[in-house]
Every structure is written in C-alpha cells, then in structure tokens.
Amino acid sequence: MAATDLDFVVGRTGGVTFPVGRHTSVGFFCDHTFDGSPRAALRVVLWSDTADVRTIAVGNDGGFPVVVRFAAAARTHTVTVTRTDGRAFPVYATLDPVPDTPGQIPASQVDFSGAGSWSSGPAACVGYIDRALDLAGISDPPARAAWELGMTTIASRESAYNSPQWQINTSDSNAIGPPVPNDSAFPGAPFQCSRGVAQCIPQTFARYHQAGTSLQIYDPVANFAAAMNYVMDAYGVARDGHDLAAKVQQADPNRPPAGY
Image 1 (tube, helix red, strand yellow):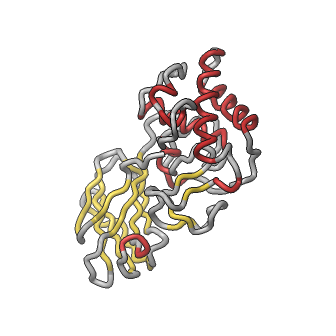
Image 2 (cartoon, rainbow, N blue to C red):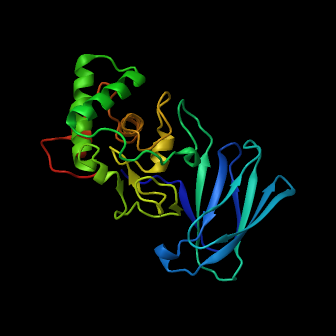
C-alpha cells in the first residue's frame, strides 16, 4: 500500500510552524541506514505562541525519534530542531494529525503486537472481511460478495492470505523511518514498513482506522477494514464494492498484480 504524505524532511536548522488545530505531535529522527548520515543527538525546542515551553535533547542513532507532543493542538506551534554535532545532514519528521473522522487515530497509537497469531488461509480471510463489513455497516449480499472477492485477491497477493511468513515487507520503498523495537513480526523494522494481511503502512492504518476494531496493525479485521476505507477514499471505490476490481488492479483476479 502506498505511503502517505505525513513525512517530510528538515534540510537545515530552523523552525517549522504547524497549522492551528491540525496535529497532536511531531517526531524527529535521523536515519543513517537510509541516507548515510552519521549518528547524532537532536535538540528540539517547542514554541507555543510566544513562550518556549519545552526543550528536549535526546540521543539519536538513526533509531528512536524525538517526539514532542502538543499540549494544546488548537494553538500554533513552531518547532526547531538541531543536530548537536553541527552537521547539516537532513533530519526526518513524522506528524500525528488530529483525528477528523470516526475511528481515526494518531500513528503513534498503532500497536505492533500479535503478528502471526491470527489464522491464515482463504476461508479465514473471508471471515475477517465479513467482520470488517459488519463494522462498516455494509450488509447487502452483492456488495459483500464484491468486497470478499476483491479483498481476498489483495490478501493472496500481499500476504499469501495472512501467512505468518508474509506479515511485513522490509524491502520495498515504504521501508524507511525509525526502527520499531517492539515490532512482533520483525523487531527493529523501519516504522513505515507495510504490515498485515492487506499490507498497510502505519500512517494509512491510523488515518483509515475503523471504529470498533483494535489498534493492532497485524489484526486482520482491523487491517482489512483500514484497507477498505483507504481504497474507498484514495481510489473512489463505491461502498457497495461493485467497482473495486475495476479501480484497484491488485483486487482484480483477472489482471496481474500491480500493488495498490
């Protein structure tokens, strides 16, 4: 599943101002494994209105991000970040948006536990899809059949029907960002790796999280539900799923795999 635009690069020391009421936190990190920059500590200063309310200096070795949580998302915030070694290598950043739809969560709340603990296979995947459809309120039999066909096709191509061996992709272009030490599929895997039965990245899973599902990205019901919400928004797929295969090639069993 494609990456979202929640990540950006700070190319030099300076301030970044966030729109009022749009975000709940920002995390800064280096990534020496990604761009070759050396290990560094970061000094992050958070400004809220005119007061310097928080200063943080945390060691960073291309791993754990320095996260600043906004005490009041409705106020304008400016954050400055400095590499303490004085080098001008890029610093990467991730944003947690303020939820604006039911079920949406900050990416920092994504739970990486439980990989491989759910059943795999076509029949199990149909059951997970049916539960996701129940939670989305999609009850019409033809609609459910269209979603079942399309999403099981996606599952077959993305994770071999939720196989424990294909819970995470650490080799595609999404596999960047700070490592996740407690990732149950691959401890230390980059944050943005695609995960779970439908291979959601954490930002997509958080943005399209379905109310009533768990926060576990490896939970196939939650993962399928987020993927379904994503394709409806990103590809314009109808809620009845009649055009799912036409609009998302990866969901069409009559066309070759194409990612999504």
